[in-house]
Image (cartoon, rainbow, N blue to C red; front, side, top):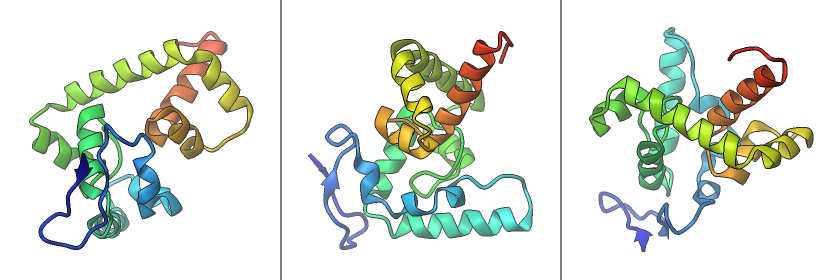
Length: 157
């Protein structure tokens, strides 16, 4: 099954989330990942959010990206043209649900793929490169890296 064009636009047909774990390669966001994770509440943040959404709205995998973000409980960044707050409203979930989902996903990855993660971190790959290899978000890799470092140092994260 493929994701159909949206709103009558002439978007490329791309594999649905369950058919292509590397669907992210179809999106232009990989060339500017920082734009999709604005922080704070300044005027610049609002400008960056609008710019990121504009990129999303031209993206051939916008709907697939949104579905992935909702399915995996992404609580940071802009995915599928929606902020985390907009996704929570769209999904009908509370912020706590996304936080719990993220912790559960992090624990799952750290347990099931601990050795692989250590090897990837040792290769000095970027968070985005690691995220692509383990099918998660760069933000999740940041959180996993922090947690694993804290565990190695015997500190509670």
